Image (cartoon, rainbow, N blue to C red):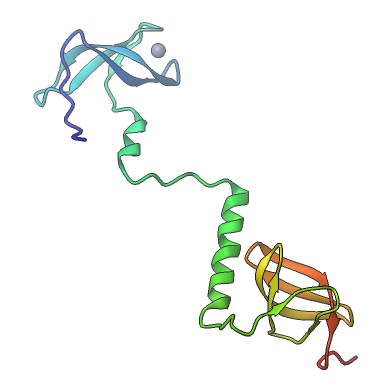
Length: 148
Ligand SMILES: [Zn+2]
C-alpha cells in the first residue's frame, strides 16, 4: 500500500475542486519536480487550479470514525463507567429484579443493561443505577440504608 503517486500530464486524477466543492476528476496540466501534479483542470467545470491532494488521503491513517454528538456523549458515559468500575469486583453482583434489595454501591447485574452500580437511593423503591449505557432509575426494594 505505497502512496507514491506519480502523475503524468494529461492523466486523469481525483482532486478537490473549489468550484464544484467536491472531489472530481481532473486532468493534470503540469507537473512539479517531484512528479506530483502542479496544476490541474476540473473535468466537470473546466476550472484550472493548483493541485491539492484530496482529503481522502486521510484514510491511509488508522480510520478514526467521526463520532456523532450522541456517540461522543455515549463514549464519555462509557469512559466514566469504566473508570467507576475500575478495580470493582463483579463477583458478588446482585441479579436485578423488581424485588431485589439494594444498598448504595451495590453491584447489580441487570438482564438488559448489564452490570451497574447503585449510585443513589432515590426513594424507598427507586434506585439510580449507573450502567454502561448511562444512569437509569430502576424500581427495587431498597434495604437498610434508606432512611428519611
Ligand atoms: Zn470543478
